[in-house]
Length: 101
Length: 187
Image (cartoon, rainbow over all chains, first blue to last red; front, side, top):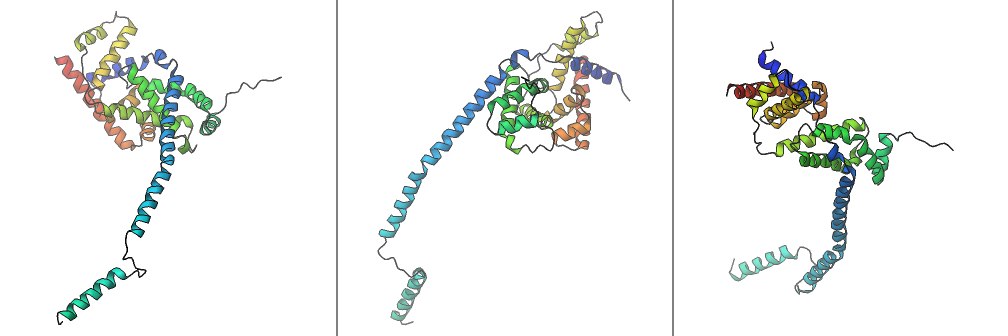
């Protein structure tokens, strides 16, 4: 059931409904401002994209240098891919033999 | 020589804008800006905020044109984006100040001799004051329901909330508004 407050509120809604904000001034040259903003966003995105592509060779060169460095700076490198495990096991066997185990 | 004066359809303009035509996008903006400004004008506090909201709406539209599948009309899709953007704007406001001399407003509204247009403007200010005391989701629902005259079902479709949720929020908003106005008049 509607009371007095409902009627007051409904009256406010009716009045406000008929009263639209005048947006003519803000609408003026809106497309121009909008397209300028879009162009700005587009160019900044383009800048990021260009720079990230330009930096690809730099990152690739760093990766190659690090790779080569790791190959040539390790004289004990073995072709046996299980060397890390077997070397440790052999040292353990030798130690236990010498200790009389 | 015949000149084709028919306006291109929304789908045509969307396709062209997707293809990189700024002119097609500008035509879409011209076609729908009045609607977006009208809707955003219900929520914006001033012209600067109104301009920001409307720009945000169309930037989102531009950046998401690729995701528009065309299942629903373009206008419906645009309205959804506009409503979401208005809702985000409401949520981003920390606290609104209320500084309207509402006692004066109320008396003048009741005066039958007053100019109707002035009374409507004052009623809008009074309502704006009340609406600013609501939670963003309540304000969104009551504005769409009472001022934009959308149905509960339409609001549910536009916001992605369930119809029950919309009804509950509308009810709460109305109760709160009544309470706010009543407390004000008692002062």
